[in-house]
Length: 418
Image 1 (cartoon, helix red, strand yellow):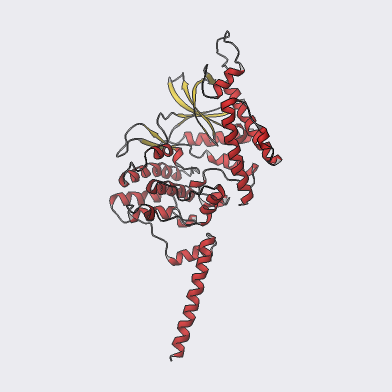
Image 2: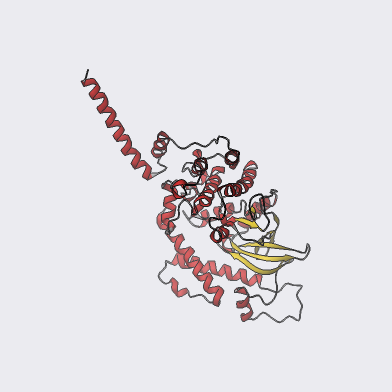
């Protein structure tokens, strides 16, 4: 991956966040801040915010069924709605928007009421600029349809997918609770090892179910694990994984529009994702992300968490993770071995599917022998020779040279002695 391209993506994300905050608070954008940027960067930021303005404008329109005597929406009303203080209901098809409950790289998520079934739902609307052509919208709708076909107790169900002239939306079960990322920040060290493994099983099980059907997630992270306010087994909540398969079209679109760019959260992305080796992406890619989540549950931090975006990507590609037991000595050795096998740089060295990982977790719970094994020195040298890890490669070459010289000296002394 070109590091300049990655740095550009880091800058773009930073500018987008800054301009989002400014737009939502005041409704104005200070594009003069872009004077030092390249023309291409200025254009990208302006297009992104133009798409956001169009989306907000569409969502703030009164529905066709609204009272004809309702006054026109003023600019002040628009700003009030954009900042989250809604003065009148917004509507998407039959769904009445209640409030915004999240936004990010994917788009905007709203809490809405379905008057037909009298229930609250979550509506996700991708950013307009991420699905800029009808072809991409159709592909995204197809992926969403596949997600809607999934039936598992630990998957957030998708109810329906709709398209309007302004864009596409996805309707799913509304979670009144929080997500795992937020919960871990607010409740550090609250769960014991047994509970953490129970939680991990609840996350791995639906991924294994999807792998059996040939479906990948591609964006597994704590933020995509929703916690419903209902006790489950030893846990104080019911975890469910969301956004199955929806990263696929966005990833393809990003490849087409931004050369060598990265989509997703680097903290949980496999080396083949951050290196743009898309031909290697498969079930083992999801296994890596599951290992990264397990690592964070056990140690309180992701495997790689540099404050610099480019450095984090470089660590994901090249640096072995610190052994979890060095950060938390109470972690059982077998559980550490399971975690480290998931985080192998080479996809072939990980569990082949989430189902295999699930079996090992269940073996750990039952006190049975696990299938995972720690890499041997020979395996580490082989990995280094394949060029998977530049740092390991340099160390391995030094070790190999020392071993060769030692062997030559040994045989020379033996021959000399007769």
